[in-house]
Amino acid sequence: MNETMRMNTASIHVWGQRFARSLPWIQLATGLVLLALGAYLGRVPFELLRSGESAMGRVVRFDAISAASSAPSGIRASSTSFYPVVAFEADGRRVEFRDRFGSASAAGVNDSVAVLFLPRAPETAMIHRPVRIWMPWAPTLVVGAFLVMVGLIGAWRGSDPARCKKDAR
Image (tube, rainbow, N blue to C red):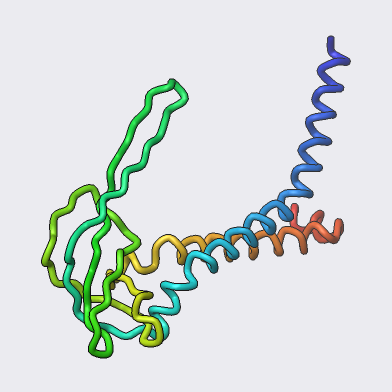
């Protein structure tokens, strides 16, 4: 029995060392995936922030979009989100777009809202909300950059066994 415990402890120790050596590469890979995802999600909002123009628009209606989901217990649920459709003027013509953020209610028809749009493609627009314009792409980029940095530092430290022993002291 004692010999079996010693073998299990040794195999756990070996597995732990292998995992510790691979952890920086896992962090690096995850960080790169998050950087790519953040860049993909943020391409339009960043372009709007960088070179978009501002205009005032009006909420003309809400598009109701229903989504159904099911829990592991088999219970099905559905929810409806209401996405504002905004109209504004760009170069003398009326442009309408549906915003990318919905809400649980359709309150606010005829409300005046600030709009960011691309002059060369006014249909590429969004309601200008100071915090939401950064969601979810900017936090995704920040977490991805952090994981890449931590993964590179871990891989650099793990590449030289002498440095690891010195760091452990």
